[in-house]
Amino acid sequence: MSGNPGTDAVILVGGQGTRLRPLTLSAPKPMLPTAGLPFLTHLLARIAEAGITHVVLGTSFKAEVFEEHFGDGSDLGLELEYVTETEPMGTGGGIRNVLPKLRADNVMVFNGDVLGGTDLGAILDTHESSNADVTLHLVRVGDPRAFGCVPTDDDGRVTAFLEKTQDPPTDQINAGCYVFRREYIEKIPTGRPVSVEREVFPALLAEGARVQGHVDASYWRDMGTPEDFVRGSADLVRGIAPSPALPGQRGESLVHPGAGVAPGALLIGGTVVGRGAEIGAGARLDGAVIFDGAVVEAGATVERSIVGFGARIGPRALVRDGVIGDGAHVGARCELLRGARVWPGVVIPDGGIRFSTDV
Image 1: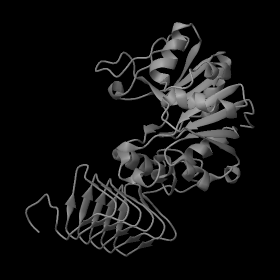
Image 2 (image 1 turned 90 degrees about the vertical axis):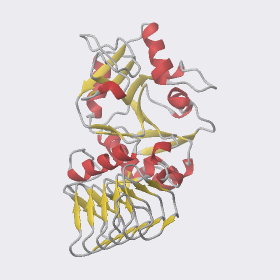
Image 3 (image 1 turned 135 degrees about the horizontal axis):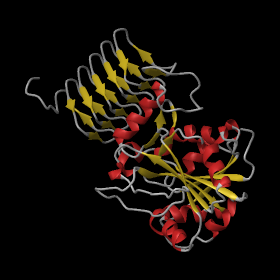
C-alpha cells in the first residue's frame, strides 16, 4: 500500500496495566517484551505497513519511557509525537486530548493493549466506501459474553452498543480500533473523563451519525491479563499472530542471540528467552516468557508464565500460570501454580512454597 497521508494514527497507551502487576510496576504494559520486542513495536510496524506515517501516542503512566525508546519514530519510518495526560481522561478524553497534534481528516485510533492481525488498509477502505463518520473494527469471537457486543444491519451500519451480557445477540465485539472523521473528535467534551464505549458511540447513534462496522475474523487478543499476554507472545513466536516486526522467525521458541541455553533444556510452546537470560540443563519451558537477564536453573519447569527482568527460578522449581516480578528469586523445588504472583525482589527460600506433600 503506497500511503495514507489523509490518515493520522492515535495510540492510547495511558493505562496503568494493573492486571499485569507486578510486571507493570517497572514498565508500562505496551513496553513489556513480547516475542522479544516491546509490545507497541508490533502495532507501530502494522501502522507503518498500512502507509500511515504520522502517529500520536496518548500517554500518562510512565510517559517518558515511550519517548526514550521510540524517539521521533524515524527508525520505524514513522513520525511520532507524544501527548501526556496529567489525569486519567478515559478513552474518549484520551482521544480528545491529542486533537491539537492531529493534522489529517481521518484519524485511526488504537487501543494500545490489543494484539491484532487485521488489514488496517481494509478498515480504511470500509470507512471511505461507506462514507462513514466513524468506523469501528469489529471482530467475531467464539465466546462474546466477556465483551461488549456491537450488532450491525444488512448494510454494515452499527445499530447498538451492548454491555457484557450472558446472552449476546451477536458474536461481533468492539476490537478497540476506530476511524473517526476529525470533526467527530472535535465534538468530544473536554476537561473531564469520557468513555467512547459508554458515552461517545451511543451519542453518535442517537444523533444519527453514520457509524459503520468493519467485521472480520482476524487474529485478535486483548493483552491485559497474564494469561492473554503469555498466549499472545507465544502466538507471535509460532506465527499464529502476524507481525511485520518479526520477519521470518517462526517456531516453537525464540531465543535472543545473547541468551545461554544449556544442553538438554526443552523450549516449546512459543517460549521466548530474552537477552542475557540463562536456561539451565534439563529445564523445561513451555509457553514461557523469560525477560532479559532472568535465570532458570537446572531441572526447573516454567509453563505459561512470565519471568521478569533479572529474576531467578531455582533448580527443580515449578512455575505454572504465574508471574514472577523483576529480580525475584524462587528457591529450589518451590511450586507456584494457578495465578501466583511474586512481587519484585521477593526471595522465596528453597522448598518454601509447595502444593504437594513431598520435598
